Image (tube, rainbow, N blue to C red):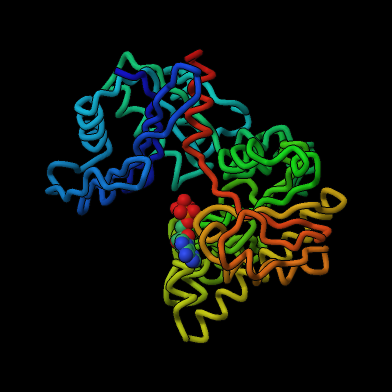
Length: 389
Ligand code: ADP
């Protein structure tokens, strides 16, 4: 029986998981990925092996999986029956606040500290923490590790972390944290050495979206800030917004803070602009003018921010696309690369259409790449290292 690490990524109604076997040479092999969706509404479990072959695809009665604890019981039962000896669990935790700048072993004290900063990521951290608690209940003796999406960015210099507010707010933790750090850290780890020494802009564009400026595999700055609301337009999040708009919505339109939270996190972005969908595939297939408007604004925002990140690094040598849209949409990559021609991107449409890794011409001053991300692998690596496995 092979030792294995379980990686968990909990959302509001979903629980994604992956199993990584620890091979004798200490490398990690991703064996299984799965997710329980519709927790609390219409629960559904899907599990695939590493070749994409479906192992399980079942619907449950609501009463069987009404919460994350029950979902985890099903997952651990499945894993026990599939001859995996779990030796550690790694969790994605979106926000680590000002204090946590590296993965760490979860203790009761760590959990209490994380509870006290859930307001920094209200849509993510509560679910991440409930998965940790459920796992502690289900397997109390199994060591668990928290891996933070903010950690990769904590080494940025102070200018990148500041807002122009009175300084005491910075000291109280009102700082730019940046997110998608596990994805960026993974991409930084796989950059070929000749690319990694240069100034790289990575576009993690999926349903959440941000850009990160990376130099020597370290984060320089990113488009996200205090929360995961800043920066680019996203599936349902507005991205960068004049703070005066918030004042207007509160003072003139009388929105409650809950209504405002809903508007900014769930009703804006591609969905809000198009009035059709938060899914880029649906918008690309639509002939509605507002679908086109939402796509155009998305590309415009990415292009403007590429310029901003290039300025922060004093130039750019490579552009990398990753995540759902970045890995799968030649059309969006083409629109973004064409807008970046002024920076020195000489785009290769044929390579782009065939989903090649390099999508710029050989002589391009700035090279452009498509590199699939693997946040789960990053979490498994951290868990392995921290637990000395
Ligand atoms: P998450 O932030 O949930 O991890 P992903 O990185 O998986 O998101 O990205 C999901 C999004 O990627 C989908 O909502 C969809 O908009 C987009 N996407 C996936 N495949 C394609 C495609 N072929 N063309 C355009 N967009 C795509």
